[in-house]
Length: 228
View (cartoon, one colour):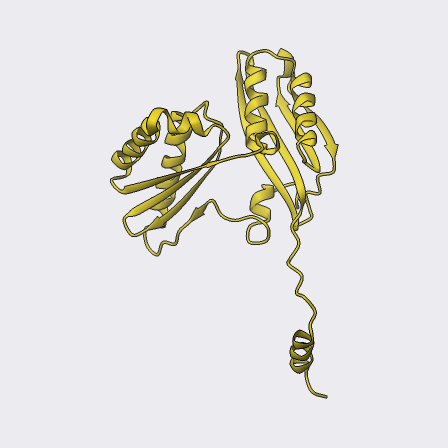
C-alpha cells in the first residue's frame, strides 16, 4: 500500500501533519477551493523563490499563510515590498484578512519538492537527466539524508517511446509508518512533452518519546493492572 498512495498522506496523524489546519461545518467545498486558489496564486507569483510548502490556518475572517522557502530574500523583497504586494493580492482575491509568515528551509538539498523542481528545471535546459538525478542524490546523501529515490517518466531525451528510469541511494522504507519520508512531484515541460519527476527523501524514523522509569511511574502502572 505504501507504494500506491502519497507517502505524506499515508502517514497523516502519525509522523506528518495536514498542510491546511481548519474546520468547516457547512462551507467546506468553498474553503477547500479557496485553499487551492491561494496555493495556485502564490506558486504562480513566486516561481523562482524555492517554495516547498504552503501551510494555511483559518480563524473567523482571517487566513494565516506560512511559506516554507529556501530563498526568503526573494519572497520578502527589498524592505518587505514583495511580501506586502503578495499580501494585498491575496486579500483582494479572497476578500479576507491575510497574515503572511516566512520560514526558511535550512537544508534545501534534502527537501523533496525542491530537489524535484531543480531536476525539472535542468531537464528543461536540456541537461542530461541521468547527470541531474545522480548529482541530486549525491547532494542529498551528503547533507544528511538516510535514503533518496528519484523517478523520471516520459519521453526522456526526446525518445519516441516514453519510459521510466530511477536513481536510488540508501534506503527508502515506503511502508514503514514511523519513517519520516518527504515526497515531491513536479512536471518538467519540454519541447517533446511533459516529464514527471518524483522524489522520495528518507530522513530517519520518528519514534515516540520514552517515558522515564521511576518508582512513581511503576506504582501507577501496577495500580492500573486489573485485579485477579
